[in-house]
Length: 92
Image 1 (cartoon, rainbow, N blue to C red):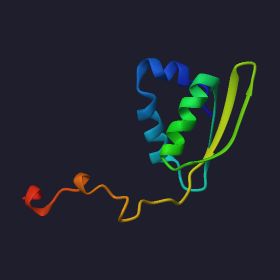
Image 2: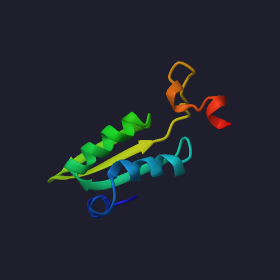
Image 3: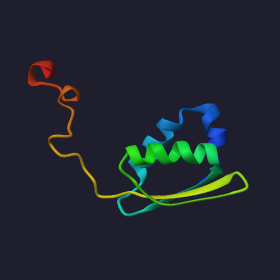
Image 4: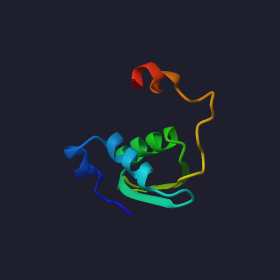
């Protein structure tokens, strides 16, 4: 459980931190964050864009908790961005 996103945001991008969490988190594992509701809302949007399942959000007195679980989702061939893949001529 992490309760330091407000402090982390002053040092680095929230998107970068969430991308690193996604990289480290194993499928079917849960990640829990406690912070103010503004940060929880931002985290929820980012996690949904990374295809993580938002299990629960809860708020009380301006503070919130979000629980997300990493799924087994992987992009299909149609979803793969071809411009992000180097061609053979670019590799030579």
